[in-house]
Each structure stands twice: as C-alpha cells, then as structure tokens.
Image (cartoon, rainbow, N blue to C red):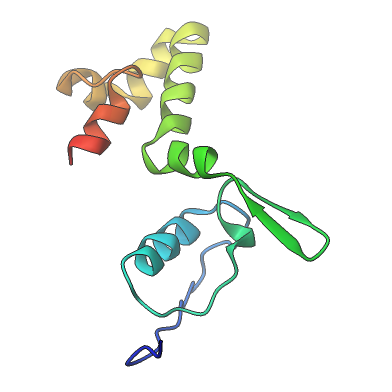
Amino acid sequence: DKAPFKALLDVGLARTTTGARVFGALKGAVDGGLNIPHTSKRFPGSEVDGKEVESNAEVHKKYIVAGHVAEYMTALQENDEEAFKRQFGRYIKAGVTADNLEAVYTKA
C-alpha cells in the first residue's frame, strides 16, 4: 500500500520526552490514516527491550481517556482540597469528577 503523500511531524519547541502530548497527537493522526514516519517507542505505555518495542494498549488507552488526570484529581483532592479547587474549579462547576472523567471523553 502506497500512501498518496507523506506528512512529517514538526514538534517545534515542544519537549520530545516519552509520553509527551505531541506523541498522542501523532498516534491519533496515524490511526486516522495519515502516513507519518514514526516509531512507537515514544507512545505512552511503550517499552523498549533491545530493538523490540512493546506497546501496552491499556496504558495508552488510559492516557487517551484522561485516566492519568483522574488519578491526579483523586490524589490532589485527598491531599490538598484548596489546591484541588484551584486546579479543577471548572471541572467541579461542570460536574466532572475523577469517576466520570473517562465518560466525558468517550461520549465526545
């Protein structure tokens, strides 16, 4: 299969650390059918073992549906209620909690 054209990811000044958001955008674009040269070792949940790259789909899904944000919400709410209210004030106002955050993403 030959794609009609090839796109290149220009990260600009973004940090290219493993699991960075820019690689989530890349994964979405590739899954959507764009031909973008890449390696999956930078996706969240990927581990490099020598020359083999093993991807953990559950970890990747957790990042797509904001599971890591839900974990942070829970931890912050338990440890510092004031910081939680400052950080997630709009979420609270919209009725979004750590428990229903995934549903917000899957509904969209």
